[in-house]
Image 1 (cartoon, rainbow, N blue to C red):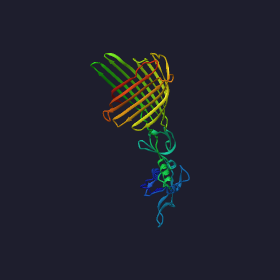
Image 2: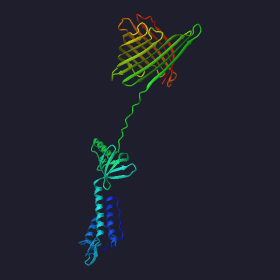
Image 3: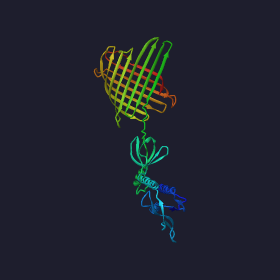
Image 4: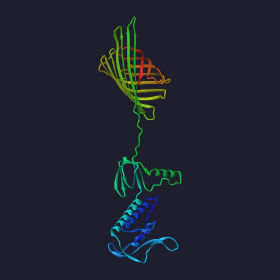
Length: 422
């Protein structure tokens, strides 16, 4: 048997054609190793290969039979080539292992071609490698992928760059703007990200605005007097609440004798109603005064408030409620006094440097008509510069207390303080 094969030429960019060519090359290689002599350069297709196998095939394997010799050559004067069977017959041996290996190669090629045509999903790994197969299942951690040769694979999402699904055509024309948007969204869905991380906007932490105030005054001459004052204030605001804390200490001496020694600390908590100027509040205060009619006083209460003005420069808030106070020491030792609460607070900024504050508090005694206590205050504060945390504050404060069994006088204070905000 003579087959004219001296050079096998294959030129194609399609993977299926390349695979077919490799199959043909393997078949001719097997036959050539068994005694086929090369005579002529030919190019064969799968159909021509089948004709060739029919031409050289015998009636059995492993024995000698009279077999026809197939020659591939020109036909007549009309051009073209085909397999031709000469009349002479020569005995030959058909080698069964060679035919079996050729058939196995053809079957393997057919399986690979079938698997490639069935599944065209693609996974691109982080290193750039691409795996072809069928996407079976995907979870938040892993992707299950069916490979035509390697079988079922479990790939971690952290190792995957993109997943491209078969049959998706993102570039299809749309009939309308809405359809075009849907097509674009579908096309974008072809590239499935292995993990989608939605970065939620982290809210900024609520900051406290605090300030420390200190002042010392003194005189020497006909009288020697020293007056010291320390104040601390901090506040935290949100769109729903406001919490303010304060602590104050004052001491004074005259001619070496202590004339004043007092401390107080308080807190107030506001809750703002949504889309309303109304608010609810609770408050409490502790007072210690060595030279007052009481040694210690505890007061608390709560109620409703109303924001009359609130903008970038001005805030005016009024509050009305109920409460009471409890005193230790003095003529009212151990007594609880119910009282009302009426308060108003004003803050106004003239500019980035100068601002004023004013407040009035009135606590009428509900058990004894005519008894009350009240506090009035006002101050002006000026920063050293628009961006400086330091400022100077001047103010006045007056306390009134009117109780039938108390002889305490009114107290009027003027002060100048150095303030540091942080």
